Image (tube, rainbow, N blue to C red):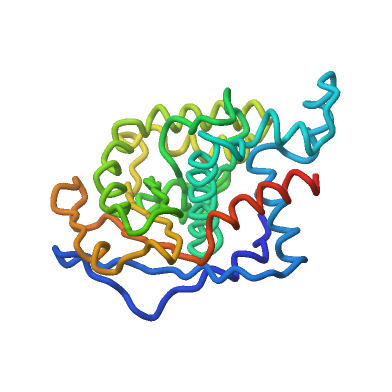
Length: 275
């Protein structure tokens, strides 16, 4: 997937924070701007996490709805409760997916939101699964390497309120659940990819479904996405990984940006209106 222009708005902060048990937290500033060309390209990229442009007309056939109304009424979380909380969560997961794919080179399948049964519900399973292949190509294709990596990321968001409600700590606490639901999430991802005839990515998922016979690096991360108005540095620094099963290796990430909830609503509206 080509790198979308909004990825350039994700900038590593010079300062790293440390948790109270000494783990580093990578801070990423999301410096979004009112750039019409970038916002339009981002809206398309964002929309296709939910519905491929090539399929909108087929999917809306029989509904009597325009493309925009189809997306607003039947696909995207609503602007009224409980939709905003789901919008914030989905947006944060997609933005963190963009970060790991376009900044760190992970392959992140984008089928998670295309098969939602109900727009105003969060998708079950791991928030984000990414893959990195380092094995060489052999006669019959790419060879496995024990350095191939699977990354599971737990993502939390907070865009409203007066102060940080310990969202990074919440992400750290829930992160170990990804190990328990990994096989189910991989199977669900593979099913969705096969339904879209994406055999390239489905075979990548398949490479990671049996760690005993095909060893790989099992990585975990916890991420919190904040509006700058609620981010509290001391609260993030007070987090700890001591009870995490990968206490010394789990990656910790904070993304923060200004006026994030308004940005979320603007992006959903734009993604629908420009379909």
